[in-house]
Length: 385
Image (cartoon, rainbow, N blue to C red; front, side, top):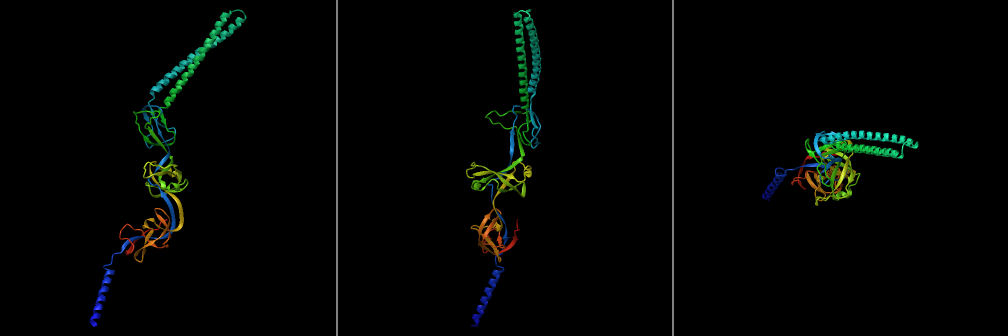
């Protein structure tokens, strides 16, 4: 009997030692995890552009001179800011200037000829009046009077013809002056020279009808900057003009800019059959800041569809498949199903399953982080607005 009692005591001691070792030296190490304490806050339902958006200038022009010619002067270069009416470049107009000088001299000659012809017409008119008086007194014959009448009509016609030639010469000069103006390219509005494709000495040719030619210069106005962003076609029915958006740009990391949807395209782009999109246009709330941006800069927009304030929320990245989360409870990880409401990339509204203060695991990128595992809190994510 005593022998059996000793055996039982030894066996109990062995079992106790095994349990102690299993709970201490042989126990699996606690998995370090990052947790987020469930709090109340604001959750927004949003959608974002499916591909990168771009800042564009609503007012931009591809400019070329109206006439062809050799470039002799370039007054503005890429990146220069210009005012409406500033001269951008000038073509060689020496031939036109020579034609203008010749036309002006011919005009002076035509005016002198017209003055002479009209003076003769006035003289013939005075002689006709005098001979009419003499004819009434029977001093001169009717044949002589007819000769003076014919001379009066001839000189009068010559005067009118000379004046018409003067008008023609003025019209010719106006045409030449118009052609000279076409040799100068001016800015149609305030803006920035974005592109320049010619240099001094090169020949530029205007675009013939129906044949597109590269522009000599591109001018853009930053006073009308906006964002063009492609949205997935499945979201097109939920985007409306006037909806608020949140804008982010690589050039301004960790910053958000408010704006509003100003236009939704009335058609779907199907350039890429597997990724059909609807273009939306977004205006910045701060128009002054928008003018400082460079067209072509990448920008993303997040359209705000709905907002709920003072609701339980968790990071969206902490969600498991099947609408569940891992809770840290008494040193272990416990899987808990939940019911959700609004959600976006950052936060998800929790309708049922969690209480304020529960600690939800957010570090789910390791296989050892799973339900039933022993865990220790390595880091607690800070609260965000």
